[in-house]
Image 1 (tube, one colour):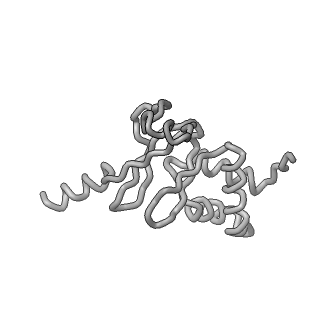
Image 2 (cartoon, rainbow, N blue to C red; image 1 turned 60 degrees about the vertical axis):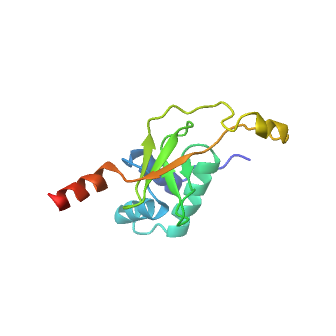
Length: 135
């Protein structure tokens, strides 16, 4: 079944695509509602979910606090999560499509198709702030 494109869905898509990083659902809602006060949070959340299911935006969701972030890039790539500020960034390590677990997974009868890897660390901005604090 083909889903129709609504103005709200287009606003949601355009907001994610123009965001300079990886917005959370709340970030997307806050940006849209600042110009379109009648849009509901549920509508934005539903459209983010639909856009992700349709493969039009990426979804990054493996964080300890359970927060989901969205990505304008849909090809496979790795992410970093700053443990200080919570920002999500792209990591410039080539995505490796090989079976990163090796032959052991195949022996268990499990065929790996893809994987997701999120690095935890401290972003450049937070490191710079810490340096300034001690200088």
